[in-house]
Length: 422
Image 1 (cartoon, rainbow, N blue to C red):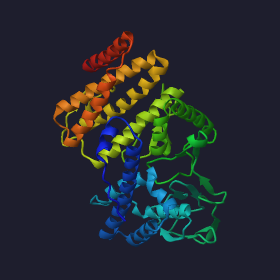
Image 2 (image 1 turned 120 degrees about the vertical axis):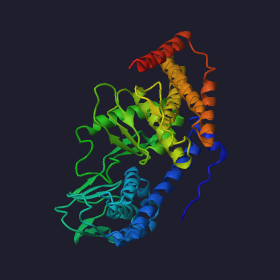
Image 3 (image 1 turned 90 degrees about the vertical axis):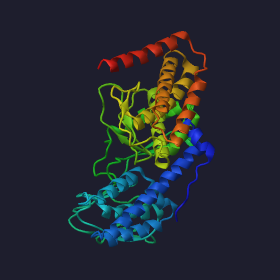
Image 4 (image 1 turned 30 degrees about the vertical axis):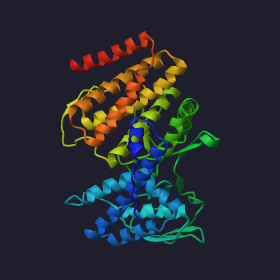
């Protein structure tokens, strides 16, 4: 059943000002609907194009439609959303684009195991992992060989999974077998501040046969991420609530020479990509920064904010390369969120935190003004950026030490001078 989403009038302004809460919950629900529509479009396209696996794809879709809420969580998993978007795009290419829509059976299988329901399907050879079955959000089942179609049955009353006749006992949302590799998870915090992050690669439908973070490195990752989470919970609890609601998976990136890098994916909402974090404060700031990108991407799925036909690029104070207008808006919004983080840190610590606050407040305001002047915002986009500007203008009334303002101004001026002379 389709759900019609109508955004309350004040939600757009609240989101533009960097807030979350109920407005963020609304966005999360719209992303769930987007994922369900992608899966339906994938099935409909397979049927319309008479795909060789159309019958099995349709059967898998039917099983997903019957999944209870616990199974339906698989559809909201970031890697499933990313796979569905890119698979559908490839299917619409003239040559099919090497799409693998038959892997929808893996999604249905994971949903059946999570939801405790029965399943009977065929997973097609040629679209499967050569060493086993990756089950999105759950783990990887190693098989001796994957050299043909795999006949799969989930016998929920008996609590077993049958793969080409071989029986595997089910154990909750997993499989009781030495061949089962459950997805790594970071269990952070405790009590009401408990947060679980699954370790997953958004570029693949499910976990691989080899873990993304080996057992020797997992404790180090846990320690670093948890330190940032504890900082967020202690000093930015409202932001922590929003981070926990929106970010569900972690994709580890290779280390960099200094500091760390992070990112999000437009069509894998809920995934945080990050290299091994450094200190707790920077990690906490990164979590909020990437939350900002996730929120704005979800808003941009609902509304066209920028004239996407415009191919011009402009300067931004946080990168050495010019950015298109949509990138300018993404950066300005993320840095509004970052400025809010440093504003709260500055009240507690002063010093460098106040410089960071002043610098990114001024930088975000500069780019917002540039966007409004460009004439390339839609009516909704102008309303959104105007609300961003209002939040930043309100912060400009904060009384800051003259030294902090001067240093922030100098840093921004130095960046622009380097950019102009590049």
